[in-house]
Amino acid sequence: MSENVKIAVVYHSGYGHTKVLAEAVAAGVREIHGDVTLIAVDDPDQIDWDRLADADGIIFGTPTYMGSVSAPFKAFMDASSKVWAEQGWKDKLAAGFTNSASYSGDKLNTLQQLSVFAAQHGMVWVSLGLLPGNNSTQGSPDDLNRVGSYLGVMAQSNADQGPEIVPPQSDRDTAQHLGRRVAQAARRWK
Ligand SMILES: Cc1cc2nc3c(=O)[nH]c(=O)nc-3n(C[C@H](O)[C@H](O)[C@H](O)COP(=O)(O)O)c2cc1C
Image (cartoon, rainbow, N blue to C red):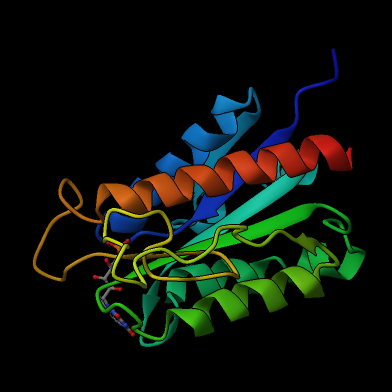
């Protein structure tokens, strides 16, 4: 039997909605027997850089704030420049997820930031790998990838509802799909 793949999920969540997605991504990794570590970046001094160095893949998650990654997530990105200088994450897999209140909310910009960040580190970006749902008369908001993203997971959480209610199940399932996909890709990549 091949060695387990190790996946880290690095995320920020100001109010808990993106954390729900991080946990769904982790559940997807576990579904295919990957080892998964969740790392919240709220306190830069608490980031386990050794765990990240050891991972086969890193999945980045952040809410979209003001059309971009959140400030705490950006602080993590900047702090990773020490790893960048050594190209310590070169050839690891990378993927991303984001969540915001509006259906668009300029989430594409956030995923683009994450993918450029991964490229600077020499990582290999794994796309979402799902056709868009909810875009025809046969579609529904219950579809996977209901927002219609390709680069990564886009989730939507109404601004006046808490993380126990939103993002909805379809977005959580889409995040779980990404976790499975990255873990499966890491197994092949190893
Ligand atoms: C400072 C700030 C900026 C935000 N900017 C956007 C935005 O550009 N687009 C959007 O759709 N929602 C925006 N929102 C809404 C959040 O993305 C949304 O509430 C999200 O669910 C928060 O995720 P979290 O609970 O993980 O922090 C913003 C919220 C905050 C607090």
